[in-house]
Structures are given as C-alpha cells and as structure tokens.
Image 1 (cartoon, rainbow, N blue to C red):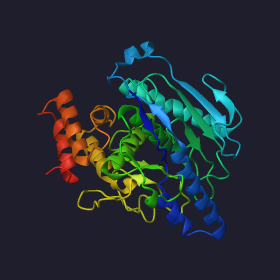
Image 2 (cartoon, rainbow, N blue to C red):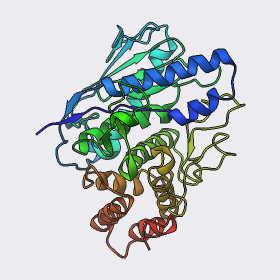
Image 3 (tube, rainbow, N blue to C red):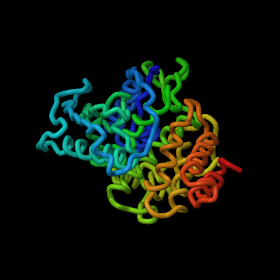
Length: 364
C-alpha cells in the first residue's frame, strides 16, 4: 500500500526568515520574501508516492557488506528553479571544481553512512534508493529542503548561507525522508484549508504535535550525525543545529537541543519551547519541536557516552510505532517501550527516558 506525500520540509523555518527580513535593507527584504514564497510553492508542488519501509532492524558492523551500496547524484540548477538541473557528479565520480557539489556529495555520504552503520538502514527508504541533490537552486535562495523526492540547496546570501557545508542541516533534511518512509502518510502532514493558505499553491504542511515530532526527529538525527562524525560524546557536543549559518548580527545557530529557546545560543527571536508548560496548541512546529528535542538531549546526557549508541537506537525504533497523528505523549510511550524492549525496566536507559519526558512535562 502506498500513501501520497505532498509536503516538503525545509531547513530554515519561514518565521526566522520573516524576522530577518524585518531587520535588513529593502533590497534584502525583497529577496527574502521571494525565497519564502517560492519555498511554500515548492513544498506544495511535491506529490510523490512512498511506501512504509520494511520492518526495522539494527545490523552489526560486520553485516554491512550484505547491504546494497547507496547511490548519490548531484545536479547543478544553475541559479534557475527547474529541477533537477545539469548532472555534475554521480556515485563514485571524482571531485569537481564546484565546492558546493563536493560538499553535498560528501555530507550526503556521511549521513547515509551513519544510517547504515548505526541503524543498518539502506539509504533513505531502506531499499537503497538513489539520493538526488540539486545545488545552486534559484538566485541566492536562502534555504535547503527535502522535497519529498530529492534535496534542494540554495546558495544563500549575506544573511543566511552555508547550506551545503552544514552536515547537521543536510542530515536533518535527509532524515525527513526517512520519516516519510517509516510513517505512512507522513508524520504530522495535513492539508491546509484554502482560507489559511499563505500562498495559493500551499496545499500541505506539518502541523500540531505530530508535525513538531517530525521536525524533532530530524533535529535529533542531524545532531547525532554531527556528533558521530566528530567523535563527540554527549558532554562534548554543543547540541546546536546549523551553527555559523547566520550572519553574526542575526545569531549563532538555528536551534539548540540542549536549551531550546535560549537566544544567546541560537537567534535573536527564537521562541522554541523547552517544556509543556510553554506549549500552545497551534504553535509553529519548529517551536514545538524543542520539547521532544530536549527530551532526547536529557536522555542522552543521563545515559552518558555517545548519543547514537543507546539513546539514538531507542528513538529510531520508536519512530516505527508512531501514527500519522502521534502526540508528544505517544512519542514518550513509544520511546519507553523501545527502551524496555532493548534494555529492561530496571536499566539506566529506561530510567533516563522516563526522567527526560517527565522533566519536559509530557509525562507526569
């Protein structure tokens, strides 16, 4: 059985771009508003079919050779908005002169390698699908996104940039594809009523606690890939997503999993929630994602060691039991069940998961 997936997910929330647009020159403001409108259109033009992945399982490192190798293809959109663009590098091809192409190729490879080595996942769909990416999309387009079918990267401008260089942002976006193939219908994907559409072409979006969980899973994966590649444990990691992408005048990072909403760590008007005491129904999914983000951070920190060794597999296993409309409480129970199955009720892992969800006030 297949299910329509009509919602693309992008790296920078439109709210952040709007806040920046309100503080920059008229010329920059016009460019940023154009980016936001085109982003909304791209999100809605997508109408791909995706099927749930096979039953998830963790593979030992020694079993890697039995899994089909992943395939990457990078295209150059040439500052246009027609996808995919001109083919410039495919799997096994030598580096080219274009740094953005090589950065996407390498960072995509690191992310797929993480999914394979840590979770035994064979590419985004667990069936070895080719991962297609387009760089130089639009003129100074200030975003990166998973369209539901492929990755798209803009070059950014003086306010926001570095999309192809940011391993955690690339991993975050590719993780949206993983979620798409695990949760039938898309976790938190809803149709936007005509009266509520920001733009005419905007038909679907992520919404509610389930949409926030979708964003959170991507943040968790992006953070773990970054830590895994750097060899950092839970104490050494910054737990910041999208560091150095914003101009210094706008902030330091896109989000913090350790301390959501801390504007000294992220950006000047970050409104992420860190507990249910702050949550408001209908809130932006990026704001709401701070609650499960912090639950993961607290779990990983309490367990200790590397986040991808214990906390990560618990979160990954839990995702497969979530429904299209899952709530934070559903996610809490799913991670507890995964911890129970893997480690037992008396384990430090189970206690860490339970304590984390209680700290963010999802569980009593």
